[in-house]
Amino acid sequence: MIRTGYLRWEIDVVDERCAQDPYAREVVFLARPTHRVVRVRTTNHADAAARFVRGEAAYDSVLKTFDNRRGEVDLTIPDVGPRRYRYSESDRMKMLRYWMEKLQREAAAFANEVVAAASSFTQLVIASQALRSGYAKLVENEIFRVIEGKSQPQATSEEPIRIDAADYQQGVPELVAAELVRDVVEPDEFHEFCQFDCLTVRNGDKYYRIPRRPHGLIEVWDVETKRAICRLCVVFQDPGMPPSDEVVMKYLLAKHQPDMLWQTGVRFAPPKGRFEVTPPRRWSVD
Image 1 (cartoon, rainbow, N blue to C red):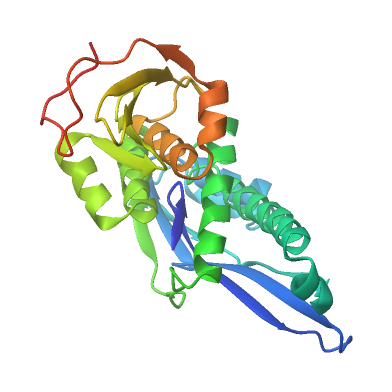
Image 2: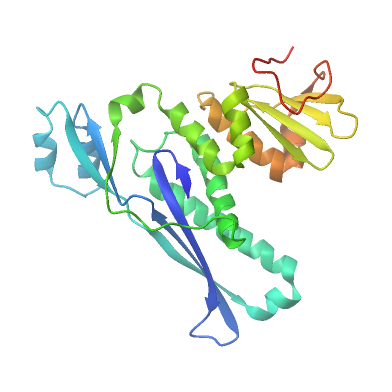
């Protein structure tokens, strides 16, 4: 399961033999909502108007919400896919790197389709191009977790899940982003995030400590000597990105694309002291 804003998706990936070509196989990508129906409580008729604009309801539904102070609107979330990627079985056997590159491109394209479908429900996904790009990376990462057997998709629930649009407008995006951290990181890493407001990632011979603060500097430490190397400042295009979403983006970069982190980050002087596996409860970058 992976989140894009308020929407949760179950990712199915199947590799099967192609029925039309005996020498080919197909990878079938499918994204199903964890909850088919999202019931939104609203104080105005904006949700009904959005459904009318998308062609999902008649204008009568808009008129009925004018005097309804605490109305509820049901949003039905469709499946995304199935998207089929056909490949030659000989490519996977003889040119593994070439086959993996093509598979990664197909997975990235499907991930963007999922985020585009989620973004059509404007009240459920934060309206930020930078965040949507980040969500696509998260969905792509979940696709490969499913392929590797590290994540198991669950059945789609027909029971509606309820959210309150008024709460969403009062700052819940940061809470949604914090739940996204739970879905992405390991249990012990999430415990560190809950207790100390930061995440520590080891990649190769370096530790990366990421604070939950807007534009927080990433501390880089040497694994062998436990000495600080530097601090990296990585700023995303969206200035209003929730801090927990920043943590997720930086975590994925540090874990999977550290070279990009070094290329885009601005280096600052290292912090003082020695590296501690468990950071202090209240810590800051001097």
